[in-house]
Amino acid sequence: MSLLRRTLIHALIYLAAIFALGFVLGTIRTLWLAPAVGHLAAVALELPVMLGASWWLARQLAARRPLPSRSAALAAGALAFALLMALELALGVTLFGQGAGEWLAALATPPGALGLAGQALFALLPALAWRR
Image (cartoon, rainbow, N blue to C red; front, side, top):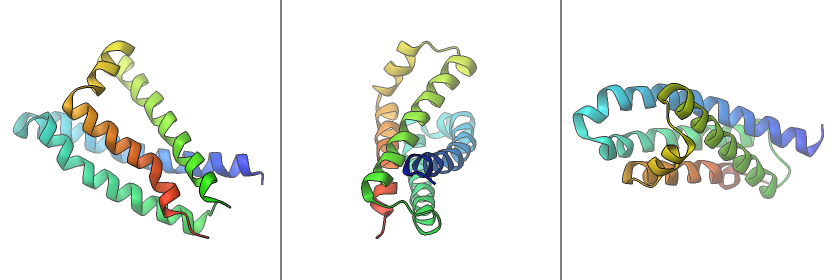
């Protein structure tokens, strides 16, 4: 199997599992947690769970579907991040009626910036979990 195909599959598995978890936790955060504790606190509570799951999955993928180099793992994480951003934008537009500008503006708020920082770390975790 080519390196490109292996990297793409790695990225898609990583993205799909974490996106599914994020969709469930994001619903809980938005509907129940944020009204109780505020949006920033809700994101701060959700983030360690998401990053813990991302780290666990990145390590599992590194062990079970290893990529040949740290740079390939970084590429998989970057691709997963790019696709995650595209999916979040699509959800914002279709489910919440946001425009692209509104979605970007939300990333500049404290909860949005904290979430974006977590997503950037999500992108780096496959490279950090990579082993020779």
